[in-house]
Image (cartoon, rainbow over all chains, first blue to last red; front, side, top):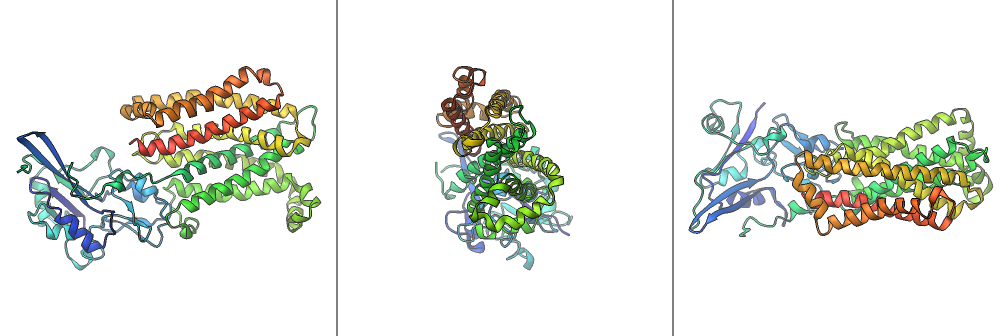
Length: 188
Length: 319
């Protein structure tokens, strides 16, 4: 058993969107819908501007509201804690989209089933590769790995840095964590 | 703002549109009209010893199964994969309110039809088009001894169907207007009220011959009580939002140019104020004035539809 965790270091992110493009390409995400977006929020007054880059995707909750509300069991968890959707069982009632506190799900315009980030489970993780977004990140802002393995890069990062988990008060125990931006990219 | 990350349409979509709002109305109406029919049937009136033939009972026995079927049809049509709906019947997840709802509906719907066949046994014998059903009514007749128990079961199932819709929305933590324990009871009471209105309308339209003024008076009294009970429920709903940390949402829900207007005009004025006004003036002491009774029933029905619409759309659009 593994505990797959992804950490997005917002200090290293430059908002290049390579992760988003790689995700679309790797997972054949249809036009107009997104498994992953990196939103850029600018704050401050010119010339003292700061850009924050925030990743918007499935956070792989350990206690997933989407799995508990799914009437057919189409939304399920693998033994490694990854939330997936069985397209065949999915009737597309959209209950899970409404239940997800992270707005991570959408209706796939082609299959009509529900789509979301899968950490590239079937196409890359099962082959021992990292998710596509992690592998293309030019600044290594994304770190992925098994948090149960003491020697993995992600375990070392968790031990060293303060990780913020989104909407922690909901107790869904996300496995996508963030190292919050302290410095930020400069608007040039 | 630069949106180089692409379209954000998927985050703002209304995922449960009008068929869900209408379904919630129809489910409440079906359960309500069945409950009302049973209450009238159980409360026999002095000058009508054989109240099983009461127009209100007949109306409920028709409205109950018809509206739940229409509602279920809407539910299926609204699925992204309507032809896969059978998975809902094969696979169950007991932590999902939707799954529990399927179980209730699966029990409730046949019982609603059974009730209709019990009430219309005579008509089925009489008219040729129902000839196919005759063996079935004979079979049902052989269980006449337990008919009262069937009515009790149906009553409990109707309560379950009317209330589960509230829990269905209540399970969505993200939407403050839905995530409230008041919703199931509000849906039950307003569904009951719509059931009274629909039974009176259909009863007066189609079953004039067996109309009993006493039962209408009895129902008008019940309806007024239900509507008066809805007022504190709505107050508690919004009070809960204000005190429970969704103050901004509550302000928006009551003051939004569109949804705020829908609430004050549609839910409060049409659905609550007008029926109370009619009851206090034209129908004083629940007098039998058919025109005003019809108007009263229509405003009650419109009010309940708008309430469901407001909860479903306002909840999703305003977060």
